[in-house]
Image: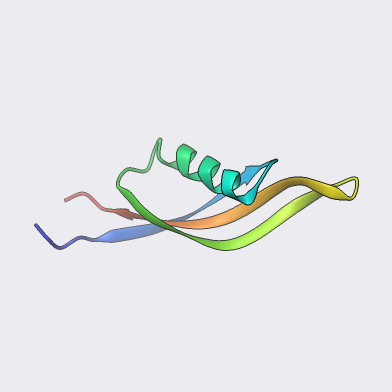
Length: 69
């Protein structure tokens, strides 16, 4: 079948070293329970400040995945 149906969920990832690692962490963990992930959108970027410096980065993602038939 060539037609597909998709669903989007919102997840949040964090990392101490970069926004990219926060995205990777979120997708890696989500892939353990969400199958057929196809795309993501970063909808928010923020961080936590510790002693005047970045403590960790946090990203909000919308992840699209294909629903199985």
